[in-house]
Every structure is written in C-alpha cells, then in structure tokens.
Image (tube, rainbow, N blue to C red; front, top):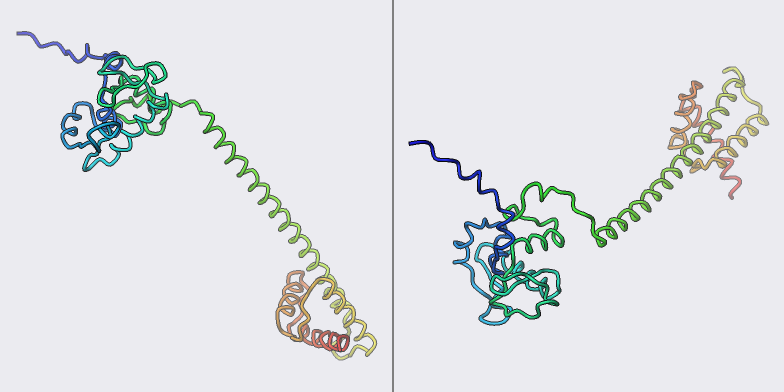
Length: 270
C-alpha cells in the first residue's frame, strides 16, 4: 500500500472560504477577541446575552473574556453607521443604507467584510485569528484623522524645539557675557599684580584710594556682591580668577582689598 498523499497542500483556499463564510455577531466578536475559529463553539457555551430582545439580544458577555461585550456593541454600531456590511441569515452583506434594517437575531457578517471593516477602522487591532502576519505588518494608509493628529503633534514639537533653542541661545549669551566679565576682572588683577610695590613698601594714601575706587567700580559694573564680607563668595570668585589666569593672589590679600571696598561702599551709602 502506497503512502497517502498530503492533502493539506490542496487546501490552501482560506481566502476563498472567507468570501462565502458568514458569522453571527457573537462569533465575529469572539474571533476579533482572538479566539480561533475551531474553538468558537466551546466559548459560545459560556456566553450570555444582555437581554432577550432588540440589540441586547446580540450583546453578549463572557465570564473571562471581557472584550466580547464591547466588540458586540461596536459591530452593531458600525452597521447602524454604514461602516460595516451585514447580511440576513448568512446572506450577502450590505450597508444599512442599501438593505435597510435587519432584525438583530438574524444579523450575520461575511468574514471578508469583517476583515475589511477591522482593517480600515481598527488597523491597530487586527487579530491573528483573522489576519496573516503579512496583512498585520503591511503598512496601512494613513487616515485623514491620523494625519491631522500627527500634524498637531509635529507642530507642538516644533514649537517646543524653538523654545528650547531660544533658551539655549540665551544661556550661551549669558555664559559669554559672564566669561567676558571674569576676563576683565582677571586682567585688572594681573595689571595690579605687575605694578604692585615691593613688600617692604606701602602704597600712598592717594594711590590706595584710587585703586580701591577702581576695584569698587569694576565690581559694581559686573554685579559682584559687596556685602560687607571679606572672605565670602566674591573672595572665592576673585581668587579662582587670578589662579585661572596664572596671576594668583591669596585670600588674605583679596580680603584686605575687599575690606577697603566695603568701607568705601559703606561711606557712600550712609
């Protein structure tokens, strides 16, 4: 006895079966939830309608699959809104504007009509029980609503980007201005260091006052704090600047000049 032929190779006609296979609203909801077609009868046993008549008779609930009820509702609404074709008792599907009202218990949906509806109106909710991996991963044409949404997001991102660019430019400008101030102060310190008198000599009173006034004016011009302290933030800044530009001055020396500057500031603001 010869080997039996592999009949599966002759049964590649799912796409044709979909053109004349019809589902009830409950079956459509279950398969949309991800229930395989061959398992649908077992799941139907556990489903109960919300009511005995009208649309409630086609709105089912499953004790463990919560999405059955909302999908039943969506399918009925889609038919009423001319978005989904339905037939009567397994017949060819039509939009409600073409076929008119169909009694709720008699409403059926062709599989290819169900796929067309989901693909067009719910492209991000395409179950593997209805669609192949090729169909699911196929690039979907962008809808007008999605285009408007993406455009709005792009506009918002553009505005935010411009705001950040402006903030960055302001920060860079402030940094340049601060750097220029620091360089001018350091240059003054360098000049003072070069022209300073020997350690065993003292500045004349007039020279000392002139230097104090000059330092006072420069500190005010560049918004350095003159707060009565001699070894605070201003001292630290000046010490760091002189070190950075290789003309170091000790904190004690800076403190002496700050003391003179504080005295001048106090006298001017009595």
